[in-house]
Amino acid sequence: MNWDDLRHFSALATAGSLSAAARMLAVEHATVARRIASLEASLGIPLVDRRGRRWTLTAEGERIAAIAANMENESRAIRRAADGARSELSGTIVISAPPALAARALTAPLVELQRRHPGLTLRIIGEARAASLDRAEADIAIRLARPEKGDLTITRLGKVDFRLYASPAYLADTAEADWRFIGSDGPLAHAPQQAALENFAAGRVFAFYSGSLDIQQAAARNGAGITALPEFMGMGDAGLVPVVPSARLLSRDIWLVVHSDLKRAAAVKAVMGQLRQVFAQRSVQTGDSA
Image (cartoon, rainbow, N blue to C red):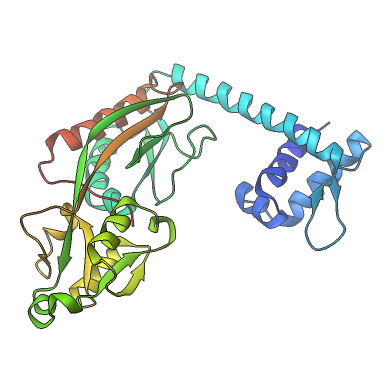
């Protein structure tokens, strides 16, 4: 049995379709199909029911997929153990963080760290979703919600305050009863700041939605209405003013998360130390994803 064939089959079982498995593995979908056919030939049993437009696993395929998933987990554990044992400041470290926060607060300090250690390669993933550290989608994560599951080492870095912002012209020209609001959709639709904004709106109209805080900021600057932004975005924008200067909408904690197997790796420790320093030095509150 070719272990690489099993890896492609496991990707299909996890992703649910040929195209999704191909994207996961960064290969053509024909490669995934060929690898699965090769695995079926070597085992002598059908693993996939190819009838219809969507492939489904056979009963035997389901059983083998479960075993393959365990093997994938053990393989990742081996890689993490090896990474954690390395002492040199080199290799690639993947950091998952909310995009607006990554762009405004994290990128410059991490560039500085990489300059000091040229053997280190840093990959920053700006995303609203929570990357899985157990599945090695990232090595380090900055999150605004404390993870509840996984073998993780979690440190509270600080907090972020959200306030309501609008353009001065909008507030001057619009009666409070007629205020319109700019809301979050996509991954941010269920974020605490969206719920707080809906509560403040009290039934008034949401005229504009976006899953990007940068777009929400631009919409508010152009007079679309009132939006909720982290202070580090709103307070530094000359085109916006706080709607209620004396009150914040809500505060959220910021968490630094790493898989416990990796926390002693020299490169990971260096990146974590730099991130801790960023938040220790920042007097301006930092913010959510876009």
